[in-house]
Length: 89
Image (cartoon, rainbow, N blue to C red; front, side):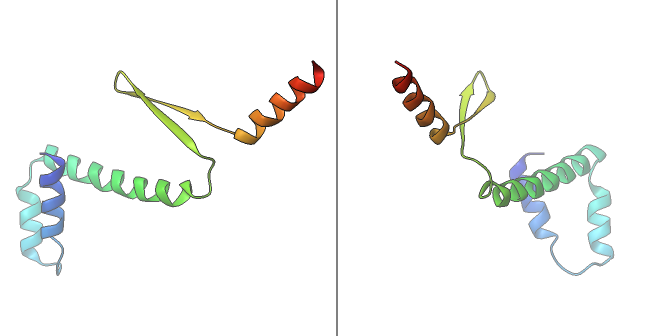
């Protein structure tokens, strides 16, 4: 089950709680039920991260071989170090 199909199935199920909804859910295979639940959790976590990102430090993401490497940048700290190096020399 693709993400698009899972999202479409979730949006189509928004409505009153009735027996039809439960029969539709029971017609799903166990694997489909697990994927839809995982997608819901991923969506909830991503929304929380977006809200918390406003409070956190800026992060640059570099993609390399399908893995994500996060490098935190702190420009003020770098500027201070450069000034100190100049004064020492």
